[in-house]
Length: 282
Image (cartoon, rainbow, N blue to C red; front, side, top):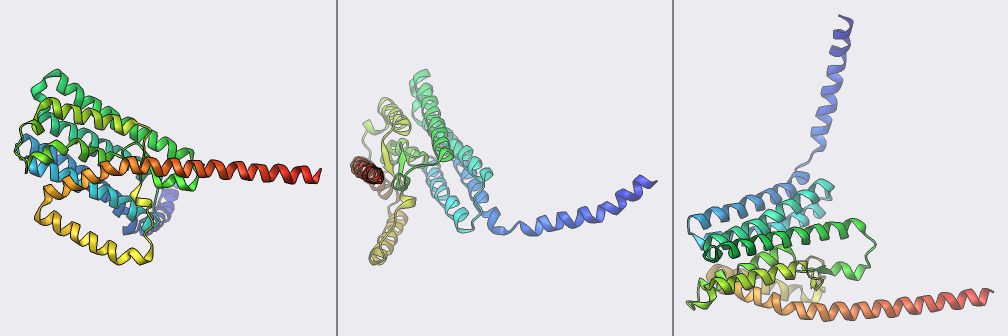
């Protein structure tokens, strides 16, 4: 009986603590993870559309998932609710959304004509996506990266890689050329994209790009034109964006190397100044 009385006395206190915890859980903390889960569900729906041979809807699902993937991090930073749980959830969702789903869509539509080789290419693409995200998480956890390196990814990011791998399908929606949907050509594109993911090539991180205030109006105009083009000619627009991204990779490499040289030169000058100060003190 005394034990029951103690439990009854503690229960109101426990209820109050639970209520306080629930009150602290604001909507802003739920939104980023909700967007991540929405991207996961949308990308997996693309596999279903591929099974139903509705290829345009399948590719649109991956494209929408890529847009949602860019939003979840923005909302997390906006509401100041970044957490290790959200980071791990985002990485696991990205493996499925931009590794497994595109590989299955491509295998079900084109690569299965190559038999075991086509399935091996699909597995290779998934493995490269997993390795790329694991490396990204490891580098983020280590920290200590110079500020200028935060403007670059190492390797092609997962969403961009998924759209690059799907580019033959995207081109085939408005171009009737036979070679675009040739299984060997698609396998070459998918395998090359997988290598780009795990490569050491620096690519621009557009999330970190700072737009000067005088270019704000121009950016709004270009964004409006892009949205209009996506509504009217979605496949041509996505193809142009894909080609522009590919062209940006050599430019990002050149910019990265230039900044790296400037950083090394600045470090050497700083070390020389420190040595001069030490010798003067002696």
